[in-house]
Image (cartoon, rainbow, N blue to C red):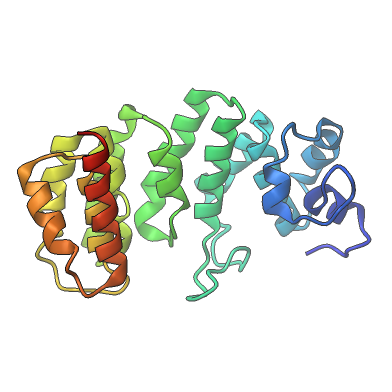
Length: 247
């Protein structure tokens, strides 16, 4: 992180009043601080890779195409992981590509080009099995109805599952089921009888089932409401409520 009294710190971590709000809040500033864009754009090519990464997150969230260029460069080279830029608070695993996924999502909310979003998401899904993703890619994909991504999501699920990353593979089940309920249901069958693991993939299965209204879903969800894992039981209850609210 740059020194608190530096220009780089001001650009990345303070709001329009100079208050220290953190990068997450700067990403969400509406409207974006256009007067900062030239300086942040120069920072994309900083000799300090962390500053370059952070400016990418901000400019992408503000809908700037130049940041998508840098973001795609990171994904193409696959050389940014394991630098400790975005460690998970519990496991310590680098969540950097998940943060880039969230930046793509925010880019879309800032009226960014949908084709560029699709291109970036395709690239991210291609590397999904090989890196750690907490949940932000899932959020971004659930927020957009990109049916063009269905085959890429299917491949990411299968390849991630083949590496033994059951929970991470299951994170994409709600996305697939929302986009194509039948394919989602078919894919869910690969997970229902797998050995228990932590975190529990059944939480993602329960979330996915709300997008597949059927007797089979209701039966499975009712079973999951009695699951000893509170996360699974809660997700099942929420999916059942989702059904009820639409009757």
